[in-house]
Length: 89
Image (cartoon, rainbow, N blue to C red; front, top):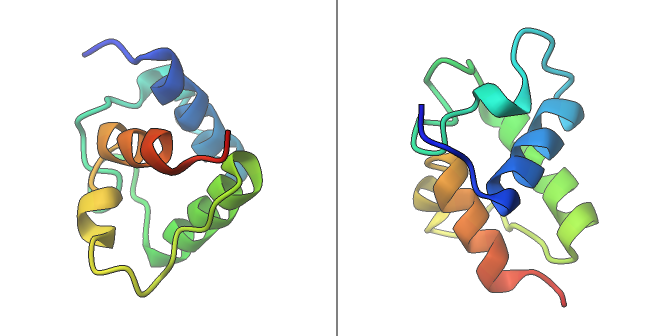
């Protein structure tokens, strides 16, 4: 498994806590594995929960009408990179 950066680990922890994932820990989320339709078993409702948690934690909104959402939510790495580019300082 690929090591997570500090930002990726923080985001993975947020995902695990906000979705109450009981069978996976933040350390087990591969930064390059698909977040949805993969081993985590996340669905569109989970995407909404993650988007809400991200907006509360990082101070910006992930919009449901963004045409880039598939790319943004592709993996822990892509979501983390998007957050780093757009988070409130």
